[in-house]
Length: 317
Length: 247
Image (cartoon, each protein chain N blue to C red):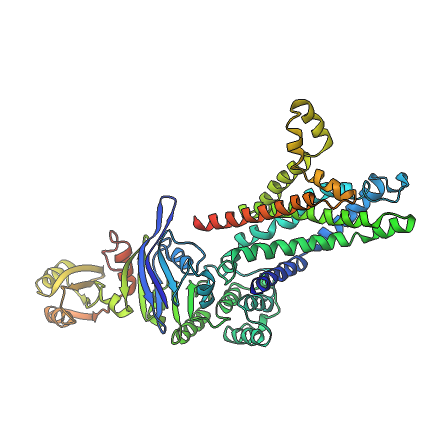
């Protein structure tokens, strides 16, 4: 549904988005990750046609967003960053207006408004002015606006930003449910969201795509994938590390904590260890008093950090 | 026509926005108070003893509009940019042009309403004497066109900034130039300094072009002047909006 090819955006001398290409099919939910200022919002603004690209192209449902702006925008529902809405209108008036500008009239408009009001739980504030709404309600109002015409493509810029944990959960459920029939791209800082909602994730940094895959694939890139954490009692940390370095599968050992005679160390595997490390470490440590021996899963936040901040993220948490 | 339906949707929303805020009511009250005060006290409506509205009433309009129209137009785009709704508006399946015209029309209709509400003056002059109502009507049309020209300029300045105050001040200054170019004291100075330029400069003034309407003459050149100021300004607005997004 969305096809982005060699997209670039230059502001002055800064390349905010640099040669980005990806595509999203119907039934896919793409998570768009990256540090602040990485170019996520800029990319989304180009997809929705708000910003014209400096180079490259975007097609939505087969329509080029520059050549056929109206046709492509009809297919898109867009939740901009910070969820703006006309503060002088009531929630109902705002939704009515957006339905009308999407070409819905009369009975169809009424039904569309009722549907999103129900989906986004806006019933209790329907006749309140947007200005007086709490952040969560305002956010949901803008979200309701983006799905009012039941679009095939949804572009959501930080859809869970500023919501409380319950609301976050609701919105994620909603995105996942809608993702079965639509093509959705959403940006977020929250990595657990990627696991909860996305079928695929892209990490972007300084305008370039640095990783693209399923959450599972991304996690495999983690140094943590297959690492082992070991806590023993009554041994000096230097003894433990020396001993563990003799295990052939171990690539690196770090001391996490040493306090009151308890030592916690973490051993990272060489490539291809595939979970065999825990057993090897356990055997190496059998003569000590083991308090904890735990195989780690790959961690997205660590992948994220090591990709986007390669100089400082060597030390896993 | 789909395009006009979109324009009308925008216009309706904008008109609604005026009347949900106190701005509309404050504006109308001030406009009516000012025009009443100036017509009857400063303009000397009764002392003149003539059944005409030209000098006591319409002569003040270019000056009222100088302050009041920028106040109406300042929020049009500045507010959209400040709140961020411009991102919603311009990603809707409408053209930027439809949004610009829709917003302009809303404010222009609002100014028309304010103008219509001055009708007691017309009733008064008809009660007291036998004025030429054709002249009054033409002058009203001219006044509305002039307000449209001011408003279109306010659209430009509003698109330039996200601050309503800045927008207000810039458009006030620009409109002031349009008035002064035809203001008698300025013309006198010009005639002494650069007599050849006088005609050129005065032809840019709203006062010069409003003069004809006040005499009851509907000159196509005057109509064209105001319409072209409106057209040019709205076009400039669209260029400014586009350059903002191009970055």
